[in-house]
Image (cartoon, rainbow, N blue to C red; front, top):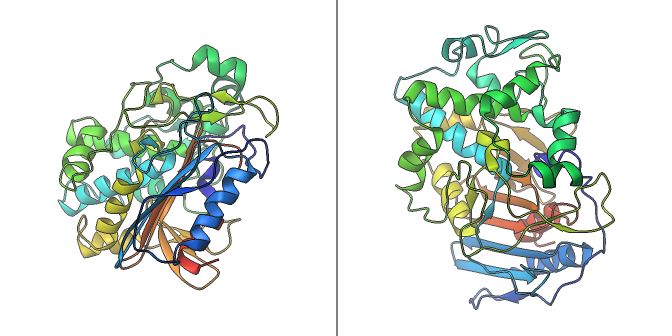
Length: 381
């Protein structure tokens, strides 16, 4: 899926049998066999090489949680249904939700040009913030270069030598935008589609300009506190994961073979509003369920969020405003987002009514089939 490589630009995600883990363990529920295909897909991910998986599904008949593999390769401590983890680009849905709330309050328009709020920031090598709208940031039709595709950035933060030297570096969002501005745009605004993390670094900066507050404070006051998402946070520059949590593992190489490294600790400022948040599966289910049910946005803004453009190169998926519509093999549509960051690959999806939700995390960034887990839960295969 599109977002598996969001912040893993140097890691080729593939299926590999590099690691093994203990058999799956599930929290006791009265679910019968309706999650059997999900269990099988989670077990398969561990066999493919993922150190461990944690997953939680919710539907009209209750809550089901399961884990597989380990959360710590050294101690073989199992993963927990309550694990907190870095959610990568799932952050984008939170950022888009805040901007849509601000629009509903009349404090900005999605058709505002970026230059209105961030004058002079998006300029250079053909980029022009006077031609790009906030809406185009949110649906990735801006054409702005993706800073995580910059070769120096990749060497510095995604490959072994650079990562261990620079993992605690602080990067400001304007630093990240400047990297993008050193390249030419991918295309003229509004003429095509390309996933760019720079779009959401800018979107979070727009929130800060409009409100005069850090974007994380707006996320907290508008979303996480009202929904009681107690495991969800915008960490700023904090390099550690809150407990309970597992370790996160990566290859830090352009291949999926070779040594495995513990990459749990890093300064998340390298991801900022494009992918720095932390959550757990229960909170993510609650967030997407509330969002799709209309509890966070008025009908007009939710309709805009669900208005998708073609995600070129990815069949059966459309990209809205920080929200992906995916048609599964059985015809079911699920809405949500996925995200990858060092040692962590996550997905959170729900049906259009919010009645059936699934969120899960792999604590490795080089293996496992997340689509198979989603298909297992919603299509039974």
